[in-house]
Image (cartoon, rainbow, N blue to C red; front, side, top):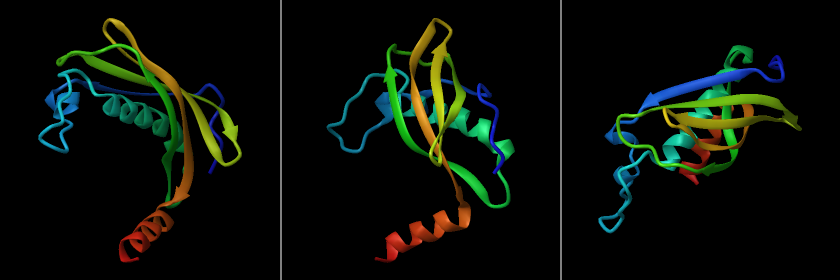
Length: 135
């Protein structure tokens, strides 16, 4: 893999629909959350933005995967709003690629933090996952 330039930026955006709401995160009938943009969806959007920085530098069957997230979700976003996540590459820590990430809606910032990604072989990842099912 070729190294991205420090300060390289990736973005991703989404219009908040019902599928992105915390109120849709029900794993049990007793689970109840507000009808605002879910933290897990914000983190996912931040991960996509970071992956877009690395994507042009990948080779062969390589892909990047998230391995660490340290994020604060600081403001609620209603349905219908547009959320944009931005990831800025700040360098490597060992084999991990480190990003400063943030997300905002039309009213301003809704979250920020750091995110780390690893570059791995797709075949190796899939084979490792398959072993977990068969054991």
